[in-house]
Image 1 (cartoon, one colour):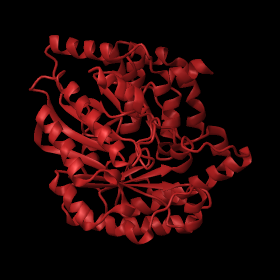
Image 2: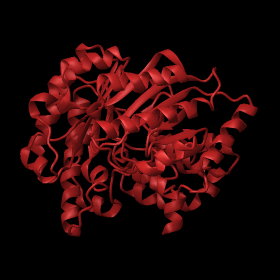
Image 3: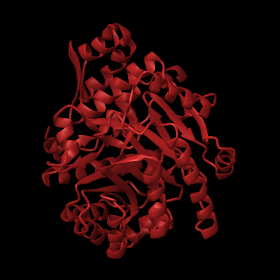
Length: 456
């Protein structure tokens, strides 16, 4: 669906923002981490895996390794920050290696690792020797596919041609680059700086090294940021032609770091300014040939995500949009979030309890969630809306044996306000999200969030 006409012509509607609230609600997890149960620990996790084995149920694996550092792109829940001191890093690597060994013991040899994801500060704080040491530990303990996807989060301001070639030699073929505003006033306002002259060259250098996928995460809505400066950044990135560009809203991803009390009127004006940046950016990106997948995520027309969406096999989960829907995601490192089947879990977010569990050869799982049938139904509804913008009642009814309109009668009533605002169409057999509604698809999903509804 080409929505550039809407994006280029739609005025910023502050009344719509006031009525519908934040347009950046994200449902990578359902339920959210705050609803995880501390009763779900390493014993419960191990029992679940053993139950899968008894049923001869095998899935490919995706390993998510978290290195806690302030610039991490993964922001489900902020963990204790790891020092850059060499001794602290070596201690963390020692326990991380032990966790890799313990997790590997739970999986059979025929469970193949298809994806390895290095999140957080690995690029910032690890030497090439240390990074390769972790990769060696993974390959010694897991059955790793030769043509695996190996991803790392990168601070674009630290990229050098030599560093990128070292990553390529270590097997990395997917780079996620966080890029902020070039405007000095905007960077000064949040005490976070990136050098303008390193941004676009970082993309070029990664392309030259032969990375299969380059994804830029561009933040908009910074304090003091102007539309003109934001578009300067965006146009420079578009000119560099990364495979994927994701637009991130500053308030959603950064208020968890430094909560700031502000006047509600100031918040509303900030929302209006941020929404204007978003809609104009979407127009620029679609005009440049990028396809809006959803959730402010754009990809080139030949990208694997666009193909997967067209074929109906796109997935949205812990790492955002993905073509790996059936992977067991193994969480490694403090605060890392994992999943096996429908189960969600998270490691301890502080170093001492994380180390303490591993000292006693126990997995450092802090809490988790074993979903109810209702959780699974609602998760599938959110998946359909986020990945395809269309939800067929019959598809849900066939899989879960419910009568959709009866089961979701309160939610369908609540969706009327979105229909009146032009966000979606409620038909006899389906819910169809409009191009306008794609900007609020996270909020549309909130209507189906039973935990929010119960809380209210």
